[in-house]
Structure formats: structure tokens, C-alpha cells
Length: 150
Ligand SMILES: [Cu+2]
Image (tube, rainbow, N blue to C red; front, side, top):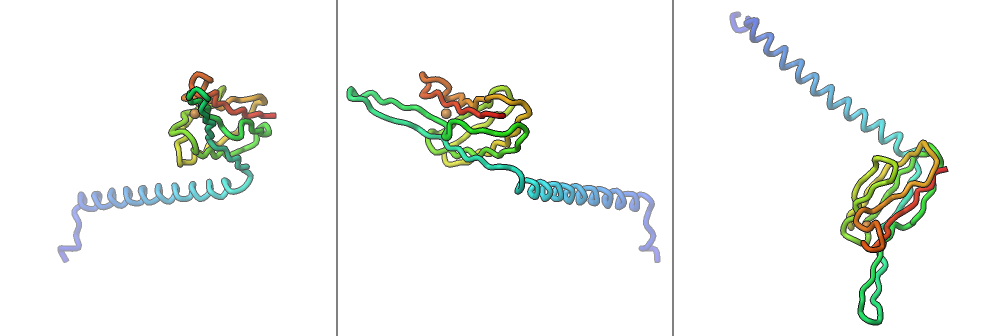
């Protein structure tokens, strides 16, 4: 009968372990729940717009190479308050680090990869999507797309 008797310390130790395991399990279950809810809402009501990184390239008669990078399409339009997922595929150019003027949105588009940018604007206006690597003609740009919100 003696082996059934636990010391108080042993009982408290196992109780603590039990509470920790329950907390960890609950945390994982809640995380899984959140993800499922997000996926359900993501599928409906969010419009998708697809964009690519493009390049124009030519050689002049005297052998000078010219190139220019562009977002394509160069203009997209959104309703005020509308939720949009902007998918940008990196086709030409290795890397395009970008930001959207007047917002804290920034990221990088890489060749062969797709970057998803969630968009929603509360204020009307024209927002510029600017590639920092190709922002002006001197840097093979201007690689600027216009997001028109009205
Ligand atoms: Cu660029």
C-alpha cells in the first residue's frame, strides 16, 4: 500500500506539469482555430489583383544598351475601404524592394516568387507603389505604379 502514497511535493510537481501541458495544448488549439477563421474570411470578399515586374531592353545602333523596369499593370484602382490582395510576381529583375507612399506598406519582389500585399485604403487619392531600386530614369526606372482609390 505504501507505493500509493505520494509526497505532497511530488503531487504539486505533477500538478504543475499537468497545468503546463494543458496550457500549451490550449495555446496550439487556439492558434489552429484562428488560422481556420482567417482562411474562411480570406476566401470571400477580397478581390485579387495580379501584377508582374517587367523589363524593356534594347540596344541602340551605336551599341548602347538601354533598359527600363516597370510594374505591369502600371495603374490599378480600388474602391475606398475595399479589401484587395495584390499579388506581384517577379518576372524580370532579381529584386524589387518597394514601398507604397503615404502608408507603412513595404516589401520585396524577387524573381520567380510571388509577393502578396494586402491593401485597404480609408482615404481617397492616388498612392504610388515605388520600387526603391528603380525609382528614377537614371536607375532604369521609373518603376512606379499608381493605386487610384475613389
Ligand atoms: Cu524595380
